[in-house]
Every structure is written in structure tokens, then in C-alpha cells.
Length: 361
Image: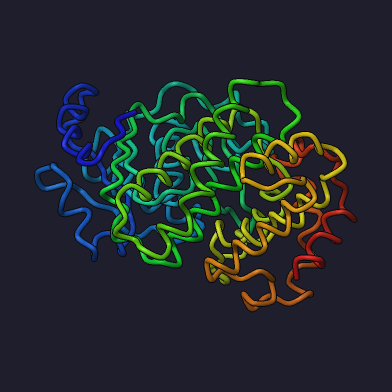
């Protein structure tokens, strides 16, 4: 991990170190338009910029074709969680037989992913997903948002340069920041025993909570940008403990590709409701979070996150995103079956998922 303003300059050294002579840069059109890709110290890069929010299998196959036809020998993922996750799935496709779905967690695919993955370097331009230092990826296949997990999907290097986040729009700054905060909260509340990850998650939570409003209101605040990028990084490191119901509920909605719902915005909406649902099962941890956030009582934590969403100008109800109750009804079963459900502190059944969707609506 290379974390500093100007860290992007280390990229040529890393390409040489990992014997990447012709990388495929996977990104989105917004970053191309902002000039971020032009700033990469790569001569005549091969660029795939068709990544959208909630990437799909078809995007992965299209990027794989570009990789193969251009004789690429490595991957450089530039952007938020969507380009980085897509790059990981392209990495699977390079030397693994199709279909991609067989490598998903729900298909028992963890053991099928081998170390025969091209070298990958991740360069986050948002402070949210934590995917830049994670071994997981999410992609939508036939309307289902599926997770992929393997140590072999871990990027060989991550360049975390806060300078690349300075042009992030206000709403995206807020939404990706809430994504990072939700990772810190859910990994900390996970029942898995890992005190080291707990300490990292709490530190990330404190940094993110203190700086998300600052950086949303003033995107040029370099110190706040760096703190949010560290919050995102620490949330990603704590993924080892697993996530919970916030993500179980968000993932099926992300699979509605026609809606183009931002993952961080969904997490922000669900976070208070899930904290209330889990309260009696991790009260001591929520009290510790309250102290970390400068609050006196654990019971005030869910409402504090509601107010934070309002302060950031984010929606607090699913209906504000144009969703109807009919949209939500088929999703409860998918939420129950999501890979994040296993590490929610309170058992989560289909009816619980249905109730949480309606509460958040």
C-alpha cells in the first residue's frame, strides 16, 4: 500500500516490478473526462472505460475481449469500487474457463479461483469501497449481485493518493464516505473474533465520522480527503471479519441495473435501521461506537446516523430513490441468501429482511 499525496508517481516502478509492460486500464468515462486517466504515468495506455455503477458480467466480458485483443499482461484499476471489482472479475476470466458465475461465493467458487490471475494494481479515486485492498468483488449476473472471494483477487499493490479524490463531486463524496463508514460499523459489529480488525475498524470510524461533513462541504480540504481515504482503507482491511445486514439488504437493490442505485447511498439509508435491529445483540459494541463518536448513550447512535445523512444531503428513505414497495417485495429472499448475512450479529430471516426493507422505505 502506497498512501500519500503524489503517490501516483510510484506507478511506473510498480509496473516494472510486476513485469507489466502492457496494462489494461479499467475505469469509467467520468474519470476520463476529469483528466484523471491522462495523469497516469503510462505511455499510450490501453483503456476500457465502459464501467458503470454496479458492474455487470457483460461489462466484464467486454473488458476481457479488449484485454485479449490488445495483448495485455496486467491490470490497472482506476476509480471506485465498480472499476476495481470489475478488474478482479476480468482477472478471473483471463485464465479461468467460463462461465464467470461458477466462481461466485454462492456457487462454491472460492476454491475454484486459482493463483493464475494476471497482476493487478488498484488506484482508488473515491474514499468508500475499500476494494483496493480487499480480496472480494461484486458483479451483477442476470439480475443477481454476486460476490467473489479469494486471496488471489487481492491486488498486488494499492496506490492511495488523496489528491485523486479532490475533484470528486459533493454527492459522490458523501455517498462513498457513508459506504466507508458502514464498512467500519459492520465489521466492528461482526461476531467473528478479531480484536486487531476491531481496533482498525474503530479508528476508521472515528476518522470518517469526524471528516465526512468537512470534506462534503469543502472538497478541496486535503487533510479531510486524506482522512476519508484512510477511513476507506481501514474499512477494507477490517473486511476479514465479514459485513452484515446493511450489505445484505443493499446488494439485491444493486442488482436492479436499470435503477442504477449507488451502493453507498443504499448503505447510508439502511445503516440506522440495521443498528436498531441488531441493538440487543451487540449493545456493548454500539456503546463503544457511541463513545468513539462523542455520544453518551448507545441508543442515540442510530438516530445520529439519520441526522448525518440529512446533514450530507443524502436521502433517508428508499422512496426518495424512486423505489416502490413492489420493487422491494421480491428482494427479501435474495437478502437472506446474501453472503454478508452469515456475519450479521443477529440472525436474519426472510421476514426480517422484508420488514427492514419496508421500514427503510
